[in-house]
Image (cartoon, rainbow, N blue to C red; front, side, top):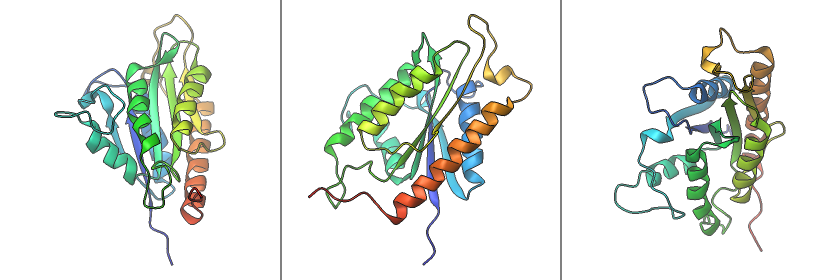
Length: 205
């Protein structure tokens, strides 16, 4: 029986609203380009364009945009979380996404398993200062804690020289090392997602 196609959702946590250009979105789009080449259906949205309320519940009430975003997360096999670096840390919107995902610790599927089991997460980080590994580690921990699986080399990043103003989107072309890293992360994510599709994590006894 032929497998159904995998789905991926990229949540871009830039602080810059659309339609202004965003380095975080540029790198996220490069990730989903690589995913699309492996027959994955992809969707991207900027969190800043939606009224995601603060909180740690699946629905924070009237006007909260998170429930509709959460529905997309639940449908996705792969989540791409993209963020810039600010003051050496993930953008505040990336932290908000993690806080809203914290509610999934209390949510289960029909087999009683955490709702984010069998889903794969990738991280994409941009900045013009040091901190990509630290930011990736912060996001990895939160994503794994709520149930996402992290593939081998499941992140990509670009950082410019410290204390300079060049952004990723200002480059004439993507450096080979970043492009190669992005392709590897996407390839490994699809591989892991397909393995989890065929052999899900067991239900809790």
